[in-house]
Image 1: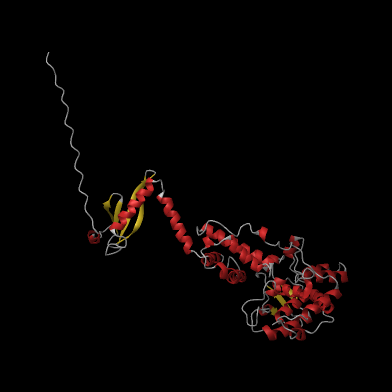
Image 2: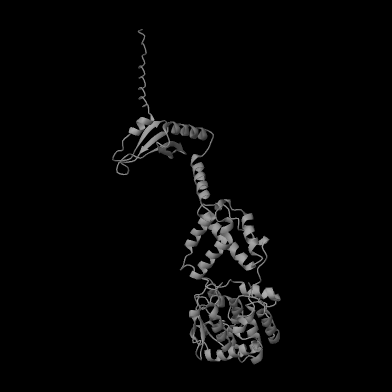
Length: 440
């Protein structure tokens, strides 16, 4: 029997690996750009990207680290050449390989570093500026926008404006609020609301990750309950209160604002924002103050939601004429200072009344309650509708309100004149009151 010899094919030798080019910084500088971008392999995972000639005749070059993550190819930039040399790039690749071997997610790490750099460059004032830009008129009215901008510049930016928003702490916010509370609890709450809104914007833009202005109500005094307006409701004590406060030193526009609020029974916010252009007929028989409906924040308080016309009493006209000598050069009837571009503050008159000893006894808004109580008591229910119209209160019947635009100017003028005669029976004339003792 013939034996068979088994033969096996000789395995083919693996093809030799192509020789890896030896690169140097000089050779890399000599790489020329092509018509299209290309990536030159330098080492394992290390590439040099060369921009096309049309973008940069010199061939802009930058380093890339190529790796796989979750089965997908990724590339991370390592900087531009020659600012980052070949030796630097190789060292950076070696470090990233070491990090990956230890389970570091390079993509997450890079995004976190980018966010940190972004947050570090984003000062609170810069982020607040972006937030304000989103709310420019017509989204907000000119006045409201200017008021928020002014409050931030006065109360907030001096303390934290230059700090990176991500580094602002709850303690920083408390310091700001604590400085405002002695002057105005309401202003402090409004300022906290602005801070919270800015931090919310910062979180949305990835400038910061937390909102330190949240949940601060527990460390802040409570605001006065809605609807609580302390007021003196008897005529003689009301006259005595007015004489007491007007004898206290104050700027003419503060004194005038208080008396004008009393004479017109208008909301303090509407009085504060009055402009000389809103008045007509001051030298005639039918002087009027036309309160525009666009004023903010008073537009939210104007329950009628439309402009309101106020017939002026003789004493109100005398007050405006006397005040014109002090503030007539301004747009505002009651400017913060002579020639000022802003009206008096929200709480200027209220602080003056409190300084005179009437805190929780009578406030500027209380004049409306005093007017309504005293006039209604004098006439019973016969003048109730005219009193409500004078206060710019809405009618209960919304359909009637929509179709009835009557303002009863002549009848309301008689009521406002009666009120002025009652209130100022023993008061100093307007010019004497304004030129009295002033606060320095």
